[in-house]
Amino acid sequence: MEEKKNLATREAYGLTLAALAEENDKIVVLDADLAGSTQTAKFAKAAPERFVDCGIAEQDMVGVACGLASCGKTAFLSSFAVFATGRAFEQIRNSVCYGKYNVKVAATHAGITVGEDGGTHQSILDVSLMRSLPGMTVICPADATCTEWAVRAAAELNGPVYLRLGRLAAPAVYEAGQEFTLGKGQLLRTGSDIAIFASGLMVSQALEAAELLAAEGVKAAVVDIHTIKPLDTELVCSLAERCGAVLTVEEHSIIGGLGSAVAETLMEAGISAAFQRVGMKDTFGQSGSPAALLKYYGLDAESIANQAKATLARKK
Amino acid sequence: MLDTIALARTMRQEIIKMLTASASGHPGGSLSATDFLAVLYGEFMNVDPAEPRKADRDRFVLTKGHAAPALYAILALKGFFPMEELANLRKLGSPLQGHPDMHKVPGVDASTGSLGQGLSLACGMALAAKMDGQDYRVYALMGDGEQQEGQVWEAAMFAAHYKLDNLVILLDHNHLQIDGNIADVLNPDPLDEKYRAFGWNVIQIDGHDHEQIRTALAQAREVKGQPTVIIGETVKGKGVSFMENQAGWHGKAPNAEQSAQALAELEG
Ligand SMILES: Cc1ncc(C[n+]2csc(CCOP(=O)(O)OP(=O)(O)O)c2C)c(N)n1
Ligand SMILES: [Mg+2]
Image 1 (tube, rainbow over the protein chains, first blue to last red):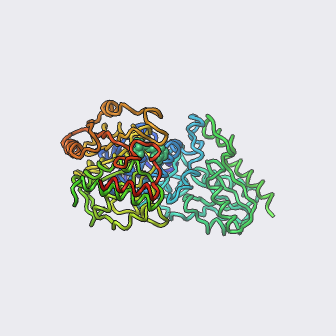
Image 2 (cartoon, rainbow over the protein chains, first blue to last red):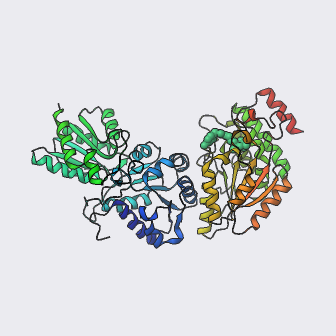
Image 3 (tube, chains in turn orange, cyan):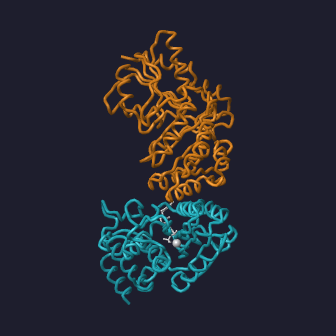
């Protein structure tokens, strides 16, 4: 995986699965007629006997994955995030999580940068749904390097994991060989004026926003929250307390996702800070190019920088 | 071990006793499924109470999880846990949850309770056996109302497509669901033609006749390249006169007086 600069996280997922096909014969992969899009086709090519196409039947796919897991397999299942977590939510609740199965829901095409397919296909509620499930670990990697770690970490962990992956090429945030720890945020940029907590594709946008802010003399800290659950509450609290202003940025509804998780944490810790969630503001998306959509919904670097300034203005 | 007729009678008595003790639970669908379970566990399931998780065991998925009392009764009688435990059904902290929990009860292979999900799990287990070249078999006990769930037919398609001849559905065709007759609520019949059209080997029997159950289970073992569904014509509440064919006894426990009468009839 040398040429992993600016790969989509779904592509890094497929490549890592293919590598794991050689290394770990317990891994099985299931898909629901989207193997090309989700990139599980790469695994199917490497280990056809351990790839199961379930057809356009996501609910059944989730159950089959559980049955395989109950017989000793490590099951990765993939579809678009809207369908994997929405259509099959109750199966993930009652079959995967209640049964504590070793099943990884690796969903691609999360967020609005799905683009032209429009609102039906843009998954903006999945983190909220998956985060609420007892026993579910939720990981949303920012780039290819982090994805490779996340897929391997998911394979190692015995239990349910939700992997949130994107369609669009993600700017590389990390050097190859970067190490990560499950549940530990990655402080990418230090700063004392405002703390920006971002996940997935928004990490690179937040870093760009921090550059823009720096040009205006604002020192923004940027943290990659790749593990949304369990959340790195220590880092969130210490940084929020130090900065006194907090911005969360996610390609997801502001209801129930990263922003909510950070808000819950800060309130319970009694930390007060100027606080703003950047994300989809209780609205569905629409068709458009990914870049146009990010700008329209205020998720591009410039909009993030502006919202950071507005938040700073409220800082006591 | 008791013969299957005696086993079924004892199971029915235990079901009534545990429901009375918990003052809640589902008698109707437990009593209609009892004979299926008695023959399956009495003569067919390759399981070992001393090693409930042994890798090559046969698997059983109670996809109609509300019939948990029937499963608990047979597992206790087989020695998976002490009979005294049955009195703790549905009590706080008890392993015997209202619907079976695989992490709490030895011998339970899948946690169920949400109808329509179990067949998919059973498919995954059967597929794992194929992948690993193992010859264990997988049994799924389903309700007839449960057939209304869309996921059941996704799984039915899956099982036939992947030629899961190590998979058997025991279909408890008691013609009732909560709101009344399945034919009135949302008719899933004719189930035999549906499963046949989905590529299954279909066997229709009297679901209370042990000899027919035995023959069907043996026959299913011989079929290659196709999953089998054994559709058993059954009576909801079987064995207790006032519960038989009464939708009202789906999810209601007998009081002390009713319980005494039921036990007297079952002693019969
Ligand atoms: C998904 C789901 N919906 C609803 C229920 C509530 N429920 C429990 S039992 C039942 C009726 C089941 O009827 P049937 O499958 O015929 O079972 P049986 O007659 O054998 O008891 C219903 C609707 C449930 N457990 N799961
Ligand atoms: Mg019924």
